[in-house]
Amino acid sequence: MTTENETALIEALSKVTTATLTTVLLKKGLRNVWLRGAAPLNPGQPRLVGRAFTLRFVPAREDLATPESWSSPISTRAAIEAMPEGCICVTDAMGVSDAGIFGDILCARMKKRGVAALVTDGVVRDVAGVRATGLPVWCSGVAAPPSVAGLTFVNWQEPVACGGVAVYPGDMIVVDDDGAVLIPAALVEEVAAQATEQERLEGWIMDQVDQGVPLPGLYPPNAENKAKYAAFKAGQP
Image 1 (tube, rainbow, N blue to C red):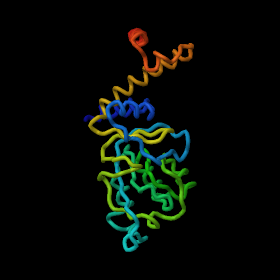
Image 2 (cartoon, rainbow, N blue to C red):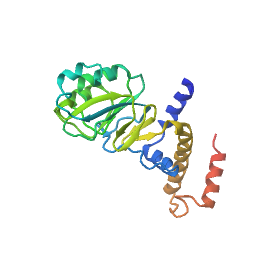
Image 3 (tube, one colour):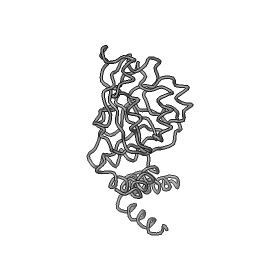
Image 4 (tube, helix red, strand yellow):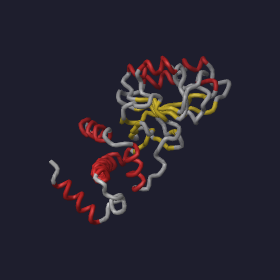
């Protein structure tokens, strides 16, 4: 895919809510695409779109989960240095809620490298400092203890299970106030087109609701309202 096509896809998806995306994906048979536990750290964060760069933790093992492991070639520090600009870091923390996977320094480095956002089913620490970095974060909460108190970091850029969803490197991630949604890489172009049309349809339906039109036959539209919508589209520039 060319850079121009990728930019156009990201721009199109940035105008589509995660709620609409889950509906479009449901119609395609994909039900498990919303990452459980990944909520915006700061409500009102902008909708963001990017390719998944995955990180994986496993349960802590005392001989491996040590402060010394932070200097290992296989570490969160090394993973951050491999993150490309514009990616969304998706971290499988197994839903562990008492060990912060990232704090302010690591988030500051991610922000400096141009990472679009951090998404995790785990928690962060140093929350005031994390907020100060400006890195948008979707997580399940905050906790003071470091990651090694409950987790062992094992690798990056491999399939992970974040929030109960299978995430592969390169899948598209969309985040907004409703959480984080995955679009499989092979379906991104198709879903972007269908979701854009769904948003347009729902915008027209909302206008009809504002005008007092009752819901039966409108949402979802029956043949009569489909014809009205088609006429509306035909009259648009």
